Amino acid sequence: MFELLLLMLERLGLIVMLAFIATRLRFFRKMASSIELTIKQKTTAIFFFGVFGIIGTYSGVTFQPESLALERITFAIPDDAAIANFRVIGVMLAGLFGGMKVGLGAGLIAGIHRMMLGGFTAVACGVASILAGVLAAYYRKKNPQVIYQPFHIMILGGLAEAMQMGLIALLATPTTRAIELVQLIGIPMIIANGIGCVLFFLIIQSVSKEEQKAGALQAQKSLRIAEQTLSYLKHGLSDRSAYNVCAILFKELNACAVAITDRNLILSHIGIGADHHKANMVIQTQLTSEVIKQKRMIIASDDEIHCKEPHCPLGAAVIAPLIIRDNVVGTLKFYYHSKKDITSLETEMLSGLTKLLSSQLELAEADRAYQLAKDAEVNALQAQISPHFLFNTLNTVISLIRLDPTKARTMLHALSQFLRHNVSATTVSLHSLKEELQHIQAYLSIEEVRFEDRLSVTYNIEDELQAVAIPPLTLQPLVENAVKHGFRNKRFNCELMIHVFHHGEQVGLRVRDNGEGFDKTMLNLQEHGQKTDSSTGIGIYNSNKRLQMMFGESASLQFSTEQGKGTTVECYIPKSIRKERG
Image (tube, rainbow, N blue to C red; front, side, top):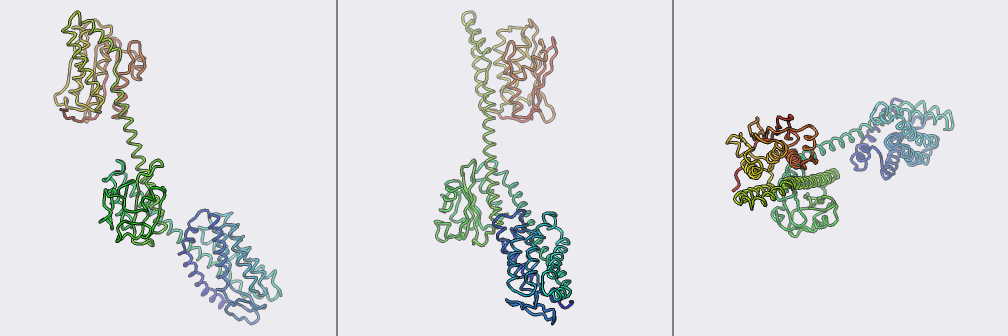
């Protein structure tokens, strides 16, 4: 018995070696790392583990109970002989990794083959092989974590072999010889097959860990690339962004050259072949045009690239389309010395990188579209003028033409200045405080005709703040609001104060009047741009909306009012200096 155990352990080395070789196969590595096998993988696994079970049979030894002789297995077994083997290892692993159908299929292949070899235990061993696959699959279903439990697998392998010994004792004839055989080979086979199962499992587990580690490294590399390329691609696809992205990819990947094109031109090429694949040249390869046309990634060897340069050193390529909303805007190309350098893992990562860069370009375009819409909305808000103000002013001018032509000319000049500032406000997002004050003065020159000498305006502004940049039509609507609402029923001593001051890293803008004040309902209507009894309220709403869009909620207008004592409106914006336009 001890001699047989040693011999079995020696033969086990062959099984372990074959298991290691199996882990080098792409199919096996993919299967080992898959959570759920496809139909194709299951079919392949049935034949793979079935054949492995047959190899396990031939790696054993022929044993004759009467003479205790151990011999090498041949293609036929004498009627009085049995086989001490490792068939159960392949069948067990088939059930554990592939489930019931795979375990049953592999068991049938290995079991039928054993029956065909002959010997007085042929039927019992064949049936035991089939049941071993079913047992392993059933245990996996009850305990899905078994594939992560080496001790359980060793016990399960031993139990499967013990079941085979029991079937030999029950089914094999003559019974006396069968029981004698079980007593001699039972313990060595149970131990050897239990150890064999766990060794095979540990080899598979090491493959799975390798795959996971490789995947983690690829994911880490992809994230690192994404982080580096985002700052360039957020501005869109251009010569400069393409060059920087190619430089990053060339540094991070194993490719011998990296290139980015648009639909017609090479935007950047870094690596070998750069002498004739130059930026701003027409695309040199026919394959690139095919990728753009077919909208799919293509892997090609040198004779498929069709470069226009006859001595081009680029031996293989992976070319993938850069797609924005189902439209190909360019290609991302990875070149290699040989097609053998392009592994499946590399291909998968390159495909993922292409999709990632396409997403970054799509986000950049969406951001540009949002910015354009935002600018258009700001311009639209800035361009709005109260029609009531315009009509009232023109009516006043018509009246003054006969009564006081000089004052009418002054008022028309002020109106033209006011309109000019309104129009120019739509062309810029920021202008200087000095320009804003000129706009206010043009407006107040018009209103002074109505107020005569009742309106007093105080400017409290430090000289160095004259050049500070603010959004156009920020203060003017606040001044207009004070004049129209605050002083609506005030007969004399109408005082208006415009204060611009330092507030840490910000600039404070404040307009205060000593008018009638507003109740909360009126303020709410003003803030939301809704109609009031005497005005559309659109000026305050527009000003507030633009401040929020440009600087965030913290720049919103803040109101403080008290009935009969006046209103204060203020806001705080980032401090920046704008040069005079000239």
